[in-house]
Each structure stands twice: as structure tokens, then as C-alpha cells.
Image 1 (cartoon, rainbow, N blue to C red):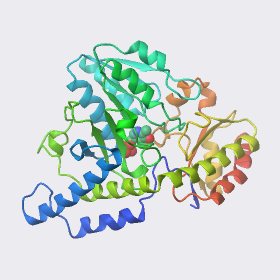
Image 2: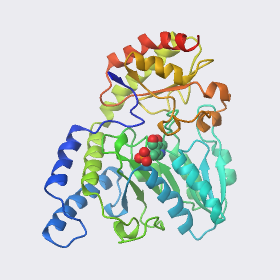
Image 3: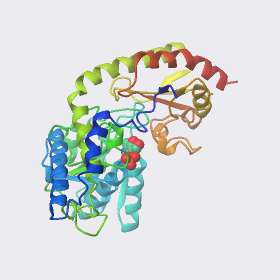
Length: 377
Ligand code: PLP
């Protein structure tokens, strides 16, 4: 594998993460809940990691709940906040949420909740008027993702927040794709809860966190020893938490330069594909999108066949989201943007990351026209 352009599926751990994690796997191996010296050493590492994460968010460390990744953080946010809120049994999600949010919201119907799904426009931007229209006095949660995994579109969270705040409704955002690439100051974003997953920004797979504003009540999903202030029981994985903190801090410290670099590469890729591949169409917003995200449909061509052709020349990308890559169904995200199901099934996504170079982009621009031609035979 020579050209890896699937960083939205997962991005390799940063070197500094591996170095920081190693002592917590080999020397500082106590349980952070133990009161002896080994436990105290582990707890010190955990506390420091939590503080670093909180600093990047502009939040308090006690508001950070460490989880097994984005899926758990999303499940905890949606179920935990919606059911703890005494206002009623109504939740609102966008039509393009990741299944970790969408399916969790739908599962609440079994507990008597009503779920409203708010649509997006052709670029994947939330319909703000439709959101305003469905908010009710008994709405217990709104969940709208920060940036979409399939089409890269970045939502206007501050505007969404204004609508929610006017009615006192808590706003959760799935920032799994945004974390490491976009600003994460929770006060500026105006959100009340935010999910992130470490392996998307150079941490370890199977690690992440949910930040929940201190005043927002949260019912836990996992019951047991009462770790994470009773919000997520289970022995805390200190090494993973350290890795998450180091990765988040590294990404935040280099963010502006890396965003400029990735945006330049992305725009070259988008412009080159639109100019060089007949029938190519960009999905998602042209500019309000993740810096390293370029996603297309190629009319009349199976996305999976294009992927197979590209893989033969050493280029790895994806047909949309890694999670729905096995499904023949057209993506709910692309359908929500108004694409015809036949067109939506032709999706190909290139996602760039820290290891991506200009020659990787050139390799795609060289190979893609032939791959699409071969796939349309
Ligand atoms: N939310 C979004 C937007 C994602 O892209 C993903 C994974 O791709 C998840 C949630 C789930 O995260 P995890 O794989 O850490 O469980």
C-alpha cells in the first residue's frame, strides 16, 4: 500500500503518541482507582491527560468522560442526555448523522420518545428553518454533527446553538471527524456536549471521550464501579487516555499550518478531478468542508469498482463511510442531499491526513481518469 487516502476511516497513531503511551503499558500499570502507589501514579497520568483534553476544549477536566471511542460517546450523549432531561421525550437529529447518533435516537422510540429528523440542502448544510420549526418545549436534546464523515460538510454550529439556546434545549455535536482539524473551543461552538474519537486524530483506536457541560444531567449507560464520576463505569484505560491527550494536543498545536496545507492539497485534488474526470461531481459543500476531505460521485460508474481499480495501482480510499462500506444500499447521507440513489451508489471518498503529500494527490489525478474509464466499461 503506497498511497493511503482514507484518514477519515482511521489515521495512523502519531509517533509521539506511541512514545507517550509506552510507559503506561510497561511501567505505570496500576489501576487508577487503587489507593496504593502504583494506582496513584496511574491516576496522576490520567488526571494530566484529562486536563490536556479539557484545555483544548476550554472546559473543566471533570466534564470529560473517557470512552471506548466515538460510538460509545455518541450513544452516551444521545441516550444519557435525552433520558436524564425531565422536560419530555422528544429528540431532534439531522438526517446526515452517523449511525452512532441516528440509530441511538431511533432506539429511544422504544422508550416512548418521538424523534424528528431535520433535513439538509444539496450541500449537506442543515435546514435551520426546519430545525426551528420542530423544536418544542418538551425537546430534551438536539444532536447535529460538527462535520460529516461522508461528504465533509461543516455545520454552522453557532447558529444551530442560538436556536437551541433560545428554547433551553441542550445541543450535542458529534465532532468525531472535526476533532484535530477544526476549532474545538466548546464555548465558541455553543454546544453542551461533544463526542470525539482518538484514532481520527492520531490517537489509538478504541479510545475517545464525551465532553458534557457540568450543568447538563447525564444518565450513565454502563453501571458498575462508578468510575468517571459515575458517568462511565469500568476500569479506565490510562494508556489510551494519555494517547488521546497527546494526539489532541499535537493536533491543536499544529492545526493552523496543517489546515492550510491540507486545504491546498484538497483543493488541488477537487479541481483536478472535476476538470480531468468526465461526469465527476463533488459531494458536500465546496468550501465549508473538512480541510482534508474530497468526495465525489461518478455518474454511471460503480464506486466499488473505481476503488478496486485504484487499489490495483496502490491507492487506497473509500466508497463513503467505512461503516457502510459493506452495504449495497445507497448512503443515507447522499440521499439526504437529494442525490438519485443510482448516483449515490457511485460515491468515492479521498480523505487526507498528516502523512499525505502532494505526490499522493498527483498519483490520484494520474490514475483516476483511467480507473473511472475502466469501471464504466
Ligand atoms: N461519528 C462519526 C462522524 C464517525 O465518522 C465515526 C467513525 O467513523 C463515528 C462516529 C464512530 O467512531 P468510532 O469508530 O470511534 O466508534
